[in-house]
Image 1 (cartoon, rainbow, N blue to C red):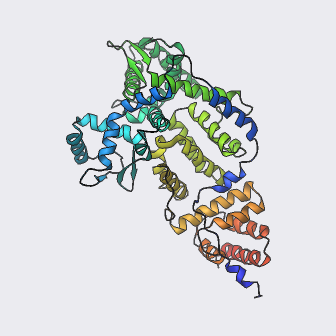
Image 2: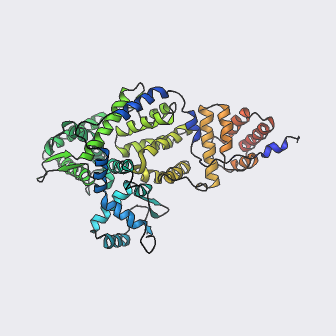
Image 3: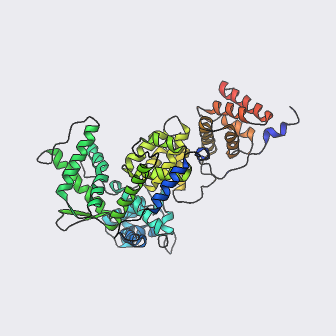
Amino acid sequence: MTSRTPRDTASLRPVPSRRVEAARALQAEGATAHRRSARRAASARPPEGMPSQSELAAHARSQLADAVRLARWADGTPHGPVAIRVSSSVTLPAVEARRAAEALELTAEGVRTAWEHARLAGLLELREGLARPGWRLRVWDTDNGAVLRGWVALFDAWSLASAAPEGSDPALVAEVVESAPQLLSLLHLTSDPLPVAGLLELLAQRVAELRVSRSEPDLPEPGGTDDADELTRLLDWLLDALAAVGALGRDRQGHTVSLSGLGNWAVWTKIEQICVAAQSVAGHIEQPAEELLRACARYSPGPARAEYRAWLAARPVGQAVDELLEVARGEDPLLRGLAFEALRVVGGAAESAVRSAGEEPHLRPYALLWLAELDGEEVPADLLSRQEATWLWVDTAAAVVDHGEGQLLVRHLQSAAQGSVLQLLEELREVDHPRTVQVLVALAAAHPDPVLAKVVRRAAFQVHTGS
């Protein structure tokens, strides 16, 4: 060895966050048009007569009053914190439900509804088998924006907040959920109460269009058929579920429906997002998730988030989350990181799906980071095991190899959790990532220090041969 040997063990500068920083560093081109779109979206004024943000936030606080009471009860009592243990099904255990009902003077059904609303609105978070207060609970009384975002998260997840009627056809339930945005848009654009019979006709037409687009049998017209009866039952479920979250109301006889102030505002906001994206040079709202993410790889973070929001507003939240996770399971590490960036825009409505995805080894590091950041707090340094952090480092480096420059890869070396280059190279042998050798070869070619480059090149050969 030469006198340059000490540089083989040069210390790596620790970086607190292990998120996919390479993806963000690569989002450099195409930002100007999207900044203009974002400014247009920010400057769009609500229609005349729509309540102010403070009035809307007051309505949201009223709608979620029981959910807030339950979350604060779970946060603690004068005698200490109330530890609520939950199962993997994320439902409130019967024992805890009885305790909450007694403490809050609610019915059993009221407790179950408050629990679901608190969970979906981000007032409660489920981690490591315990229910903990979410970050929105801490700012609930002071931050109108946080309140409205919490209510919108619940609004987006209306189909999760109220279970579909027992015995319903899952395929038809999915079609009804996918058709909901069209019904809500019609209610918003007409501004007047609409008859339920008219909504049923529109729903049947929309479901038929969905089936035709998939080359499936058409849905019979509403009448005496079993399918039509089932569709009528599911429309009632849809309207009751949206009423339960405060998005709409029905008259006393149940014959007509109209949006609430909150529902009208939420639908207007989503329509504006879609219109802004459609008017931009590179709107991607009609593209599949993979095409959206490939395009957003060229944008800076702000315009990319605006594009994610518009894309999400154009489809049911469950469908959007499934599409993004399916892309994350693919072979492109850059798209994997961007998929989880888009899921951050979804927020709490994606929690259940992301938690399930955390059981898959290649998604686990991303899912753990996503779940930890959901409450808005700093990610703990020991959140990932050393092996998980190293796997994530390789995956991010592979994204840089595919889409970045050599200098960016050298800078990425500084984000490794290990204390030295040699320690990193040693632990890379234990990580089962298919791109490890390719990353090391590219790093050796890009590193300006010939001694370190030689060490990295030797490590690449050893990983390749298994020696």
